[in-house]
Image (cartoon, rainbow, N blue to C red; front, top):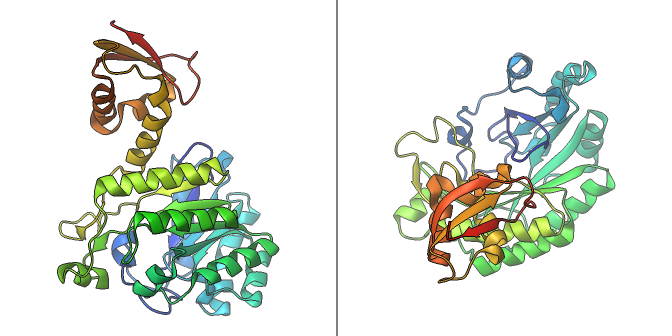
Length: 346
């Protein structure tokens, strides 16, 4: 079950690795990402997954529970197979355990028949694996679709009343910070309901791993990836487009030694980005260098982790910016969200 942020939908994923995919993308290794082999999912698998989720302590019926089909190109599998999978979930929606279904697919894999089928069988959200809106990047990564396909798919999905998500991947071959920020600007104009940001990493067994070994590809460094994602996230969310996931989710198979060959992988990548964003927001309220030697920070209680940062790196940044030693961080309900209050020379 996943999704970042309070009160966002509780998503129970059912993985269908590579099903419907016309080819394997250069960066893709779904078996490692999902810790699931590319086998056919049947009704018993779906029942087991959903029953386990419902019986778990983390299941919260108040969080708009949804079932998600991830890991493949859902709208390119045969129509009969689509109906089979959706109908396997139907009893759980009829009984009120789940509110709706979401699926992920490619921007070039939509047609009227499949959209009508999903609309009639409880699908409310479609996430598009667009990755980039730059034609050169899409061509170099052999995606097989264009930026125009994304534009047309978003329009079509909105016409049918679906919520639309867009998945983006900074750091692909041929990409740059400038290109990716242009991708973000194009996505802002499309007004999707949500975005996911997955910086490209090099996974063993992918074509991208071969390119990396041959020095044909250099992934983003961790700091660069955090910077790009923080700027992208701020741009999207300032336009009312929530970023619901930042960074690839881990799985036992992905975390095995040697599976991640290179790239900006971090166990808490999303937190690094959110903390970096928060550091920028509180900077106007920090003292200038030389104004204090020791400071205390008063912070809304739920934002203390963001101020401290991963392993207190946020506090180190504050000390570097101000030249003052942070003596304490105090929860203070009177401080507005996104701000801090500084006690000087405590």
